[in-house]
Image 1 (tube, protein in one colour):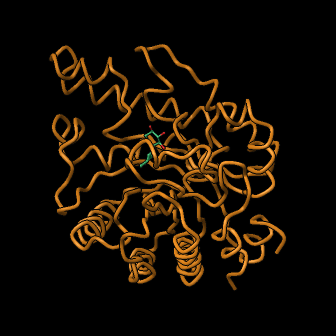
Image 2 (image 1 turned 120 degrees about the vertical axis):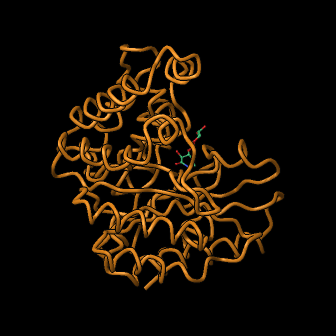
Image 3 (image 1 turned 180 degrees about the horizontal axis):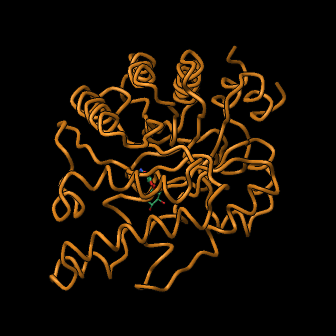
Length: 319
Ligand code: XIL
């Protein structure tokens, strides 16, 4: 294959990237590489609640709209990220809950309106939505977010039902990190999905973020975990793949990283239900890793100058 688009097509999956909208607007080489290589896109931040409703009732859709429009022009499908999360909430919301000016009843209707408004806005234009993000903790307990604390565990079923009503054809996902390998999280998430299905809740997919690092063993059981979700009738996807390393970069580390990327693709391809593999940024010029993991970086397929790294070549070589 000549590039990731061809690779994806040959394998019958979508290969996507998270997109930094400012870079998409300002950097011609970023724009060009994104659209040459990828057949699926996710907004890195532009669809998060703090981005779309920074002041109560003041909606700022320009960046999210720009991503969706760019995707249509470039024949890319879109993953919506994300409707219900405990991070990147607008300050008016967290402050209102903290000071008691927003009570539980109001919070529930705020969440319903948020989901309905956002999903409806992009109805027919989003292939899959990350409806709930990171709702299970590493120890297998449910995350005590403002949603669980104030609305109780039923908020998850509600969120899926509201999203489904707003766009009945969108695939609705539960998404999480460490779901590649963490047993307590895997078991709780599987049980959660089964419980939702037993109540007739419209849930269609499980997303594995896939934030990996070469200082940790590759999650060797990942394909089996994917299959356990697929056995429940779900589609699965790798939604935020990146492979970080301790700096400085060396040729050995880049070779190790290439192995992680190709194993992740191989794992996805080995599971029929795995329909999409999306990387969390494609260039080290715009990656969340250095800012979030001090001393680490070089997590992407292309370097800062958009030169392909060994990991890129390794993906093209996957059969
Ligand atoms: C990250 C973005 O990449 C950063 O730019 C932002 O500052 C914080 O969020 N899991 C997720 C993503 O689901 O939304 C996060 O994205 C990375 C971890």
